[in-house]
View (tube, rainbow, N blue to C red):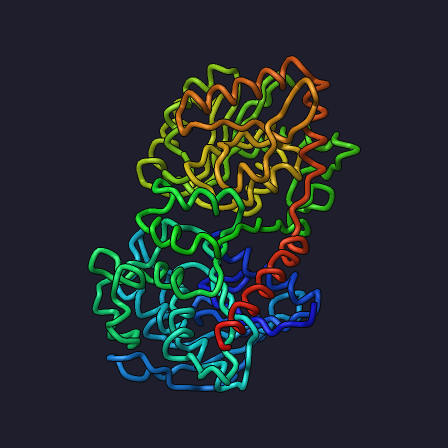
Length: 494
């Protein structure tokens, strides 16, 4: 297809600023689109945590950004490049909003002015296009932080029918986070109170930025086909299933890709020994290295090691692991957990490690090197998520020959195929219910295969290591969405 001018707006992008998978997604997709010839530019907040000298950022321009009742805010804009690509990245600097220790909050609480912080990002992104003379074909925005952009494009920045209006695509990475704030935000948005109603921005007498974006974006997508289907249901829509149903004809799902340059057991410098699908001898060395690193006994070949790398929060089903922990030990298995999150979970797992040092080890916090060691050294990777829009760690685990034991939800259902010992097909073990019993049943299937069916386990591991989820494939799907969004926008102007 012809080269497109694509403007992305997001709160995160690796390696500049990141707290989760959103940052990896924005980087991976923008790089893949750039490699196939598109002009991709990304606008991010200029957080003070971003080291301008390290990333070779330079001052681009200064501009005043209108913010409704707040007046105009003086912003600086820095410019740089995403690593290993031709992607241009702009950073909106306004220190009263972005010169803080965290991206979204501190000590588990969001900043009370997050509404204004991210509305400024959205308005600044559109002001920037005018200041630099950019004319994007499509504006691709990510999650609630950027969801005001389609609202602005449909209102304050909508040109007359004879002019060129860019299409917009809203990608929902996490439906639970919606950007709900006091209705006084309408005076900051400055689009008119006629947009404060239940089929626009209003949500129980408050402003819901994600909901507004859903109603105003040309097209919508989520980061897996199954999650696109799930968010039509009350359980997964978190109160705005009506908005999704109103726009369901415009909603699709595209799986994220994985960074196999970073996550590759054949070349990974962080693990004890490299190995491949053809020669997996190094994986046993990685298991013993992980046990030594975490102070677990080095066991014989019949004791499986179960790995968890996760935020310790309810969404990830971490309470199911906690509730089933003693029965997991009863499967004659070891368990390791790496992550941070809810205080009760951190306390519980620290206590469990103290009381069962031969069976369980944990590290509270995130350690990139240890995450790689867990991927390589575990026999199974456990993901009992209550919902999972896409998930990346299960993709990494399969590449490392560590079959996932995962709940069949969202991206997990789309990427992990349940193993069938008879046909020797599948890449992991799936279960349906978000219950301890369902988790234990799946772990029981996994550990029985591990001990009693070496031929089946060999097939399972080979299947898992052969799977690939690439950003190149995802970029092709996004090209199709951009083209369709452009056609829709063009037809609106006729």
